[in-house]
Amino acid sequence: MRCAGCSVTETAIYLGCAKSNVSVIMTAYKKCGNVTPGKHNSGQKRKLTDRDKRVLTRIVARKRKQSLSQITSEVNSHLRNPISARTVQRKLHASNLYGRVGIRKSLVTARHALQRPQWYRTHRQWTQQQWQQVIWSDESKFTLFQTTGRVYVWRTPKEAFAP
Image 1: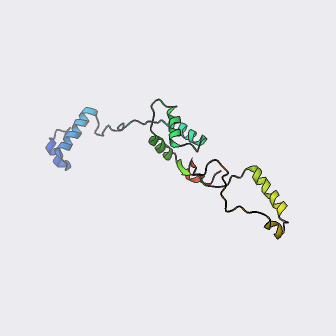
Image 2 (image 1 turned 90 degrees about the vertical axis):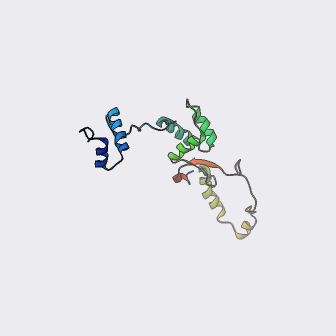
Image 3 (image 1 turned 30 degrees about the vertical axis):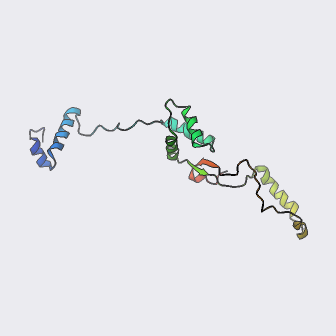
């Protein structure tokens, strides 16, 4: 309507909007040639490229028991501009990797798996009296590994019971 020669007031009344809206839209049209806002590049630039994100997930896949601060320092050694631990955590969560307590389970190696049937075969013929000579240690706490506390690992929700 404005290009056809109508006034701002006539155009606003016809469209049922404010005169200021018509003025702003016409100014943008004259300046840019279109009326859509040019805000497609607004906001802060991305700190990590797609390649950096892949490097981050590879670092975590290689060493799943690293702490967030260790992962952050290793990632920052690959980058020109350092990023915060919170940014690393957000990117890991976006990749479906979360810091979770590792499931407590006994370590069964291939050798242990082979020895179990052998142990069963040698002990299945034992009598009641022989089993009474065994000292059962179910009331004592033994530490088989270095840590007695919780171990955190970076994993996806589906990997909870993976070795």
